[in-house]
Every structure is written in C-alpha cells, then in structure tokens.
Image 1 (cartoon, rainbow, N blue to C red):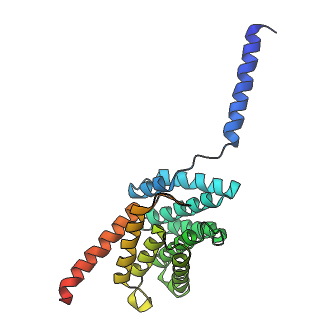
Image 2 (image 1 turned 120 degrees about the horizontal axis):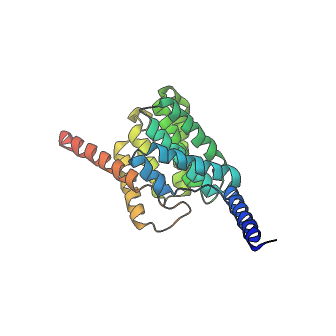
Amino acid sequence: MSMYRFRVSIALLLTLAIDGAIAQSPPEQASDIAVSAMLASRDEAGLGAATAALSAACSKQRIATDCYRAAHAHYMRALLAMRGNRAAAGDALIACATTLAPLASDPALAGEAKALLSGCYGLSIALNPAKGMSLGPESARLIDAALAATPSSPRVHYFAAMRLARTPPAWGGDPALALVHARRAQELLTEQTAGAVPGWGAPEVERMLGELEGKAEAVAPARE
C-alpha cells in the first residue's frame, strides 16, 4: 500500500470513529439556570431544543436529575405558551407531570419534584379552571409534602408562594402567607451554594416577591 493510500485509510477510520462517538454521545444538556433564562428572554426555539435534549437524556439514561431538569423545561415551555398557544401549554404540562411521576420516591429529589408537580397542576388549573376541584387539593397536598421533605429548598418555597398567591382565599389562598414563603425563598437563594438540583429560581422568586410586595403595599393604606 502506498503512503498516500495509507494516510487516506487512516483518515477515513478516524472520521468513522469520530462520527460514531458523536452518534453515541448524549445531546447537549442546558442547565436549569439556562432554561430559566430562555423563558425570561422568550427564546422559544432555544427552550424547545433544550427540552428535547433533556427529555432524550432522561429517556435514555433515567438519571433522576436529568429527568427533573427535563420536567422543569417542560414547565417553562408551558409558561411561555400559556397565552399564545394553550394547546402546546397543555401538552407541555402533561409531559411535565409524566416525567415527574417516577421521581416522587427519590430521596434526593422528592421535595423538589413534588413542588414542581404542584406548580404543573397550578398551571393546569389556570388553563382549565374546571380541573380545580380535582387538582387543587392535590396541588396543596404536594406542596405540603414538599415543605416537609425539603424545607430548605428555595424552589419549594417559591411554589408554595405561587400556590397561595394564585388560589382564591375560599379555596385556601393566602397572599400574606405567600409573601412569607417568597421572602423565605429569597433568603435561601442567597444562602444556597449547592444542592441536588442547584441553580434555577432567582429570577422567578424576584418577580414573585416584587408582585406580592406591591400588592401588600397597595392594600396597607386601605387597612389603616
């Protein structure tokens, strides 16, 4: 074999090896913070790609943290689609709940998973208020269980604040208690350095806290 043909053969073998490695490697996975930022910037294409990659990783490897991140991405897609595409929002929420179901018994993720599932149910009720009769009590049960399992998670307190702020008082809503949870979530985010699912929540908590504090200030003069 000539030196030229030898070099071509080696080049072809290397190309095939690289292509095979790429085909077998998992898709690129966005962090929770990146997914959160995609929602804030309304990056629908980026969020869709991140959701697809995380869902593929969850389906292939069944690693709990990957599946949690996939569920979180589905939740963010639902939030982004709530006003413009209600059908897509509904599909994303179903995918979120389906992905979270096996995580409820994972000791490292049980609280986080239950809180996120409570949030999925809350959005489902917002899309279809008729579901409130069945999903409302279950959302409350889940958030109570999440607080008991992971009281130091800022995301658990965020979803507790979300549920209390978005639920009518006749059904257990409490804006004042929601503000307590939102402030606690902010404190925990400041203190938090690492965790099983570190990262996301800061922009969401900041928006929620600003909303609740604004409403509290508006109500205060009327009480005086």
